[in-house]
Length: 186
Image 1 (tube, one colour):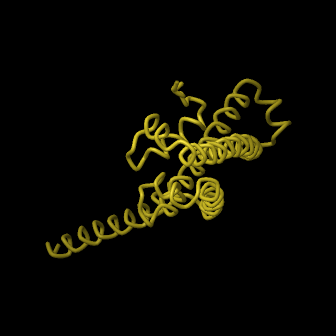
Image 2 (cartoon, one colour):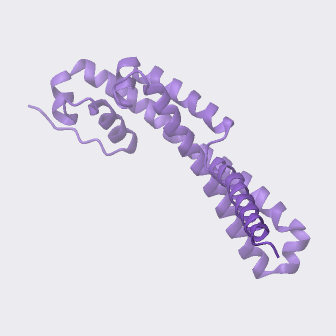
């Protein structure tokens, strides 16, 4: 047997293995990225927040530079994607537990695991979206409140939240979460 043929077949095997791995990596990396719908929804959320906070305050919340809107959209799209993934994972866990508890009733109700997961994931996604909308509403209200507070009492605002460029973001975060602490001034 010619030793060169053995080396050639090993090289071909290695090359084909590397090529197959190269095809798999982008597919798994793409699964971690937000979908177009999640990104579009994020853009809508950011537009509403920018309107509530005002351009200057919105820019300060997301880094103080021109790319504030892009940062907001990126951050929100990732949050939306994480909610979707969590809903899917939790639905799968619940369906498997239900199937294991009573296989006959499960099969009669859902026919298969995929149908159960699909129904539950949709329900969980809707619940998560409602909760996110409530949070977005609280954040918009907080942004409006902080905008007014910063305008009406700049010294008090600076005392409570600081003078750094992230002060407005701190204010919004604390007010949206209900953790704002106001210092009584006499």
